[in-house]
Length: 57
Image (cartoon, rainbow, N blue to C red; front, side, top):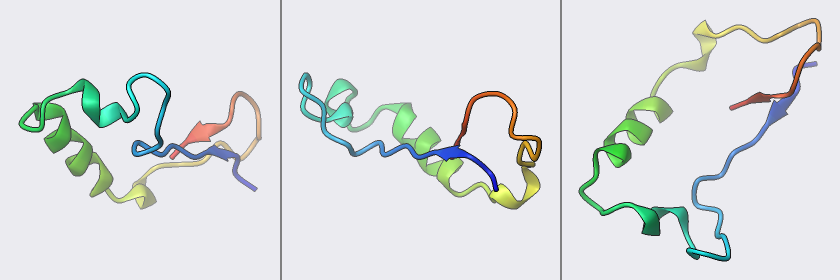
C-alpha cells in the first residue's frame, strides 16, 4: 500500500495565520498551484517497495 503524506495549503499556521497571506492575490504562484492541481496523477508511479520517505500528494 502506498505511503502518502497529505498536504493542505489552506491549513492555518501561527504566523502568518494562513499561507496565502504571504503572497499577493495576483501572484503567479496561485496560477501555478491551480495548474498543478489539475495534473492527472495517473501518470505518476508509486514507490511499491516502500523504501524511503512517504510521498507527498
